[in-house]
Length: 277
View 1 (cartoon, rainbow, N blue to C red):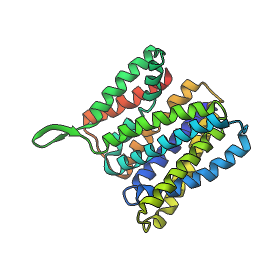
View 2 (cartoon, helix red, strand yellow):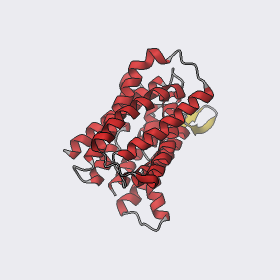
View 3 (cartoon, rainbow, N blue to C red):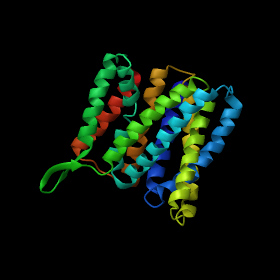
View 4 (cartoon, one colour):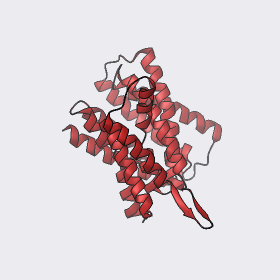
């Protein structure tokens, strides 16, 4: 059951991020997030009220708030990267977020398992290969959106650390508090930047879909961690970029150079190995 839930969660995240990145081409990102974040907050509130222990506490709330701040900036980088770059490159780079908790663990004296060590090398090599593209008159340059994908990976990794700490207090109220933090920051950004909102209304059905799929995936993943081996669940959930890559190929007709295909696959495989370890 845990495997099935994790696979569904991974697919839901892939579709959600693909649609979000696609809509970021025409809708200002702050305006887009100002729709999806509050909608997700309402849905997560219901989940927390039903399943939570109401034991998050002050420290857990702080961890969740920091995770929300890092996560929402990461989502903005991801959507922008998907909008301006090649999705088949940006998405696999973003999937390497588990590198951050592993590196922090190493700094604390932990030692990665052999499979994690191999995964780190594979993921980093994959990022290098996937993010380079040839340019006339020059050897190569960094592909559009690749740096945004890398920034999103780092921020998502930091968010994972905060959410993990918050969920130790309460695994249901932790995600809710995270979403409260991200929603507040998005609404503040909306008030200060005042982006044009004319493009929001036509995109509303798609944005509702993005919010619904994101919350569905988050909830299914949380439940899956209680139904199966966390190492296996984490690996399956980390495969969500495959959905983005496939949809980009089918819907947008994206094509990657052979070396970039190898790099994207290596980054995904490395992320899976890091999670498995």
